Image (cartoon, rainbow, N blue to C red; front, side, top):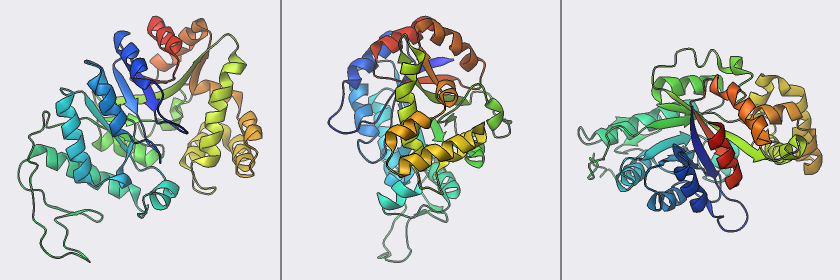
Length: 334
């Protein structure tokens, strides 16, 4: 199992010093550093900033949202960054959720499964440069000649020759069908809220993993003497995703935690959060759930609990932290 650093996206004011942390991760032997996006800072810009000030560590988007950009735009951006970083890019993509897709990007959310498949097929066709790109999908058509077209669309071929014809594509997915899709057409899977103690939840979806397929999982890491105190930021994060990152009746995070066996407890957290009782919602998050999906406590405890992750399908553990001490603790433990 390799180590990665998840710097995510920032909220509120300007960026924190993620470059220095990425440089430290590189010096400690971490394999990769990852950025993310929701509806604030984007995934690609900080990744370029990090890439310009590091030399070896791989650069991953975990994830970039497919509704934010056309497939051709993502293909161009990925090929450009891959060239500038000397082949260090890992492209993580995901569908986000209906609140962000329709509320922020202003496009339909329907049929994310089909849209993801079409998106990836176009990316790979563009990078191969076997000829001008033609694609007649349900959601993407190249060239476009549908309603509103002036009828002058021309099949084009990427001008830039990609450094690598096959840039790794990882899928962010939580539902069983989407996880299975990741194993079928992706190079890796980016799970969220994964418990190494409940791997049976994904047993069917991961049954046909092929050699070389990666599972890169973000794990919040909090180092400290008191375990319960260390769990507090994890529980606040979980409460936010349970109550604030999805609609009441359509929340993928709630669904996966329900499949993990916490359906009743998570429903109560969601209720409290939606009523504006955020502190109560965070307090209602089960300690067991927060502890299983994170690594918290003294370095010795973190070292012991890493064993469960090493025995799980996870091949890259992406440390969600802004604490240099947490990176050192993980490096020492590995």
